Image 1 (cartoon, rainbow, N blue to C red):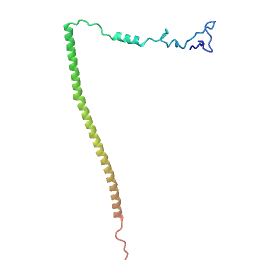
Image 2: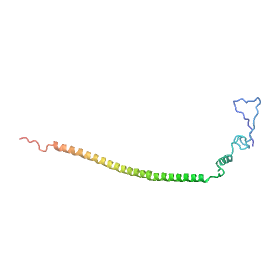
Image 3: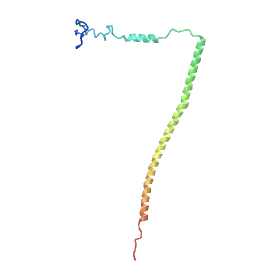
Image 4: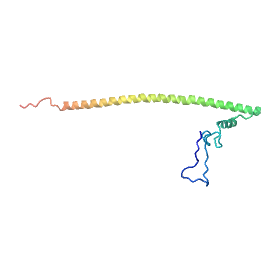
Length: 149
């Protein structure tokens, strides 16, 4: 199945005097997307080969005993630094995090105590106002009636 359509955009003049049309076959596919066209993107295998060739190991070189000793000393020092760093983290950071958790728990308990205390003080204040009102009533009430003789 072939679709013959001119490669002319409506509203634009052609660049040549004669209107030559390019026939695009659907079976061949669109030239810039097909794998057979010249403008097709490079394949994935090409990219994979490029990456593999750049990451391939270089041929082994002869290393002197002195350099091997230096590498061994450097590796030992690195391992010691890592172990000291891990020890520092374990001793310092973990203990501090435990202290922070304990402090947080203590603060939560303190907050609960303060909330209960606030509630108790409010109740005590209300009770004191009630007692003041009743005391005022008692002091201003006339128990003995006025008797006129």
